[in-house]
Length: 290
Image 1 (cartoon, rainbow, N blue to C red):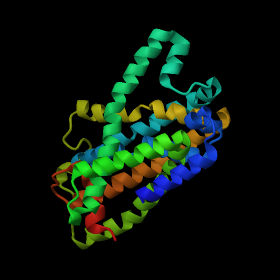
Image 2 (image 1 turned 60 degrees about the vertical axis):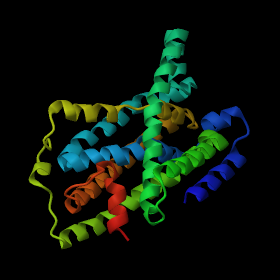
Image 3 (image 1 turned 90 degrees about the vertical axis):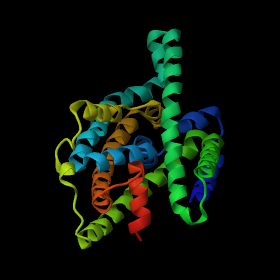
Image 4 (image 1 turned 180 degrees about the horizontal axis):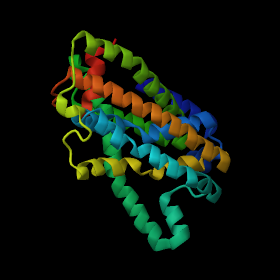
């Protein structure tokens, strides 16, 4: 899958990337459905399927729904700036800050983005490596080797074609992610029911034993958009297309939220305790799904 995704990304890049503008924004002509797919995969990537799933596993479905209410709110807020971002022809947060507040603000924003993405990128690469380690358990592949493979392939896709190759591979990933989740749900419900597995009482409460501050700490980061979203809005054909893609992302995000909460809830019934809660979705897929 990873090799095919890499080849596909490079083929698309070869056909569609001719200038630096193509590299950064796809020449402002990324198709609507691809734009929706890459926005969705960007907002709900490896971090969402590890970190957010861990929160649902630890706190229970109600905690999951409370914290997952943040992304739709953030997407609604993004709707009101998506068109303006496209009209401005600004691609990055530092560009936007610089145009409004001057060069000093642009430099500060650039440093903040760089520091933030050390953590953001780490979660994506770790999630990818975790999947490979679980799938290749029989060959005892090390986490370090898995991380090296994922980093190399992701770098090739990204550097090879910029936003074009990333957007198209994102769209495929988003389709597989949502489709896979909804195929998994009835299987897992059947398995949990056949085993008579139930959730512990503490995971059925509204707060799951967490304090208000803890819930707020999980809620607020999920509401924030990032550098990636602005670049993708800038790749739309026009401002109307950018706003429409935001609506598509909103619908897709609701589907992802519902599916993650349902999958992790069934997994929590099957695994009363789990050494690495962030791997709960990967673990239940390997152990229980066809």
